[in-house]
Image 1: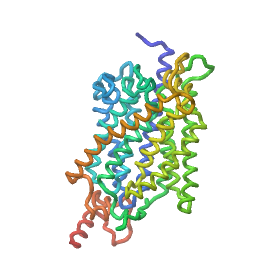
Image 2 (image 1 turned 180 degrees about the vertical axis):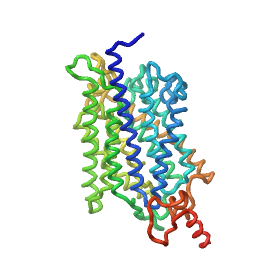
Image 3 (image 1 turned 45 degrees about the vertical axis):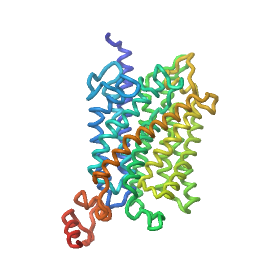
Image 4 (image 1 turned 60 degrees about the vertical axis):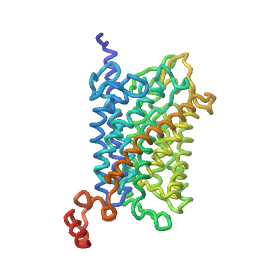
Length: 461
């Protein structure tokens, strides 16, 4: 049946909106790269930049071949079994713009994990885990929560606990998945050389460039306006029974809520860390801001702006607290990725179960249909169904990622292809594995190439 002119225009506008959102989310890869580069020491800058490129290019191929099919094939509640290599795309449900948008999400997951194991991981290990994470582990979690046939999906015709889990843009599906993977990788590898002294006391190994960290933070914040508001997929959807309201209204509100949550978390971290360490720290503020953005990603479309402020406030203290606990446990994560994306992502899912507003839930998942009733936030009188589904999502993601990525990292460790040697780690991955430094050293006592580095090692042996 041929579409009418009005339907064609609506479809075109929605496609343009989704593509623009995909481009914004892809910009987040630049943000990840800048933050990673600034958060590591100068001797590892080239390595971490290259791993960010690898996450994108390897993830592209794996998500195209397998990942999209596992995530959005509609065969059963647990895993998709069609649409491999975009077979039969476009169709009545999905088109190329939707694939591109979801691809931008998939490659972001591996970037989170890369940060947790930075400065001590063999490059070949990145190739393996990035392909596996983007092509299999993440897509299965995405299928459960986001595919119409997924068993936890709020779009399902058979809603789990009569609600489904609300994880609108991926506090759990994206951030918690990447964080748990990074957690296991970092635990299995162990801390960086010199991170803790002989008595288990932490030794600061600060990143070398705060400028890159701040630049990366702003790029990620910018990209989040594609990540959260863009997850509506369509902008031209009107709500019945309202005056001049539709998805465009919810999209604007989602952008405001996102901004307030991130800003509040950044501000609370600024003063909180000032009280704890005695000075104003730019890198801490950047991570705090990002923690607020991670937390609000789950419920950004279903809460009021004031709730976004509350979400960011708590997210900042979650991150500060988990960083303290991590040091007590001798856990080393150069980018605080597991604490930030895992801890704040978990809080975001719980927050949604507490503060989701019924009107906004119906607008988001039923296009504002009149006469529909759905479970909503516990503290707003919506009962236990939604918060129960949120807790289940947290638990199943933790178990799923643990039983897949944990053994994978352990296998790489047993094969001696996970962690680099102590000599190469101390010298730096740039010179020992990538042929030279990211920055030009004028001092003559620095090895200027991989050949110089190997000559020095031979002289010392």
